[in-house]
Length: 492
Image (cartoon, rainbow, N blue to C red; front, side, top):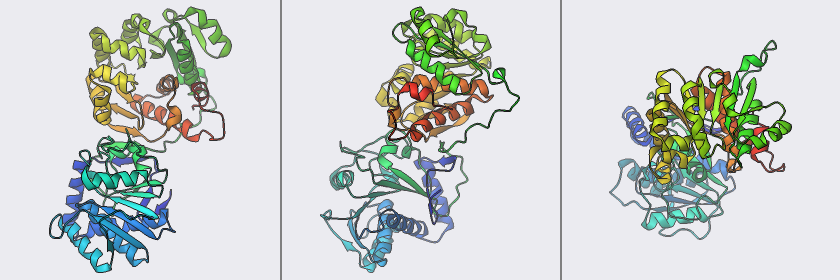
């Protein structure tokens, strides 16, 4: 773990608590009541200045874009330290003398007294930019000077350090509210989250907008339960006992593979096999491809779907199933002891209220289910738009979990694992290498394997999602392009 004083890089700890804006403001108010005036802002400014020097040690001229509120105050406090340390901070500030939060006014007075340069316009040249415009205060599309400065922060080739949150990013949801079409192009983006980590940094557009995330708790340890957890570095399951056998790790039955889509079922089966399932059966609907799948993957036991017994294994249903998967679902949903519904199975459930009823009844019968929708499939299940799903991914995942009383894996950047009985988890592994056809089938098979091996279905889903993303993280940049078949054979 890389550290800088109290500042930690978010790349090694297994689980991090995440707090929404309301919780963060409450934690801040409690801390301020217990500390002397201006203490938190001065700590924030020092942490920002220290990190600025760490990420751009040779920078001399530093542009600080400061908003009128406390986020701008953090930037002003940072400017005081940078000036003291012999740098050339240039501040563009949207505040006014005598108006705004008391802490920010105090920081402005300190910056003036330290001899910090204030300017009306963005400097023509700078070595580092610090975004201290809005922080967690972003609630709508920025306009006016903030929008102009935000555009400059988006298109610069110089390093950018965002204080607390990137301006334009919703701290709760990860929704990008800025106007710029060229956003997030700079690979040298950093965000220093202060006091708490916020969910929006790690899902939807948060990861692109934030770049490398750092965290400084400013000496405050929250006692509240978090909004969500970030899983960042989950350890692989322990080695198998020497005396184990294939029956020790459960069976997985994959059902899908309609004509023209049998590869999806094969991918899920291979992933389940490499994910550690004891035995994997693949019920392929397209009879003409069964022999070819057996020849290509001898360890898979390929059957007709109707020849599989859902009661004796963990079932993964829907991969490449097409419209024909609907006919299999009533029996599968009624009889399988553990079930993963993916792809066309989810679409069938979205269209049929009788299947929705069967799904809801599974929980009452102590038969766990995992749904693995991408945003469009989630929108179909909720009868809303994809934009509404992405507008608040945490809420969507929890809504689906509560509606159907099951575990939900809402896929996408910062996949979310939700359950009626757990605080939701945002997954920190994975990258855009997974943005290709077939990777969802691989994930479904992997989740099936992990469920077959674990008693706790929510925990199994969390571990499987992390392992899936970790393969993409570890994929060699100079190696072959990641495709779903390679991914299926690489998961553990």
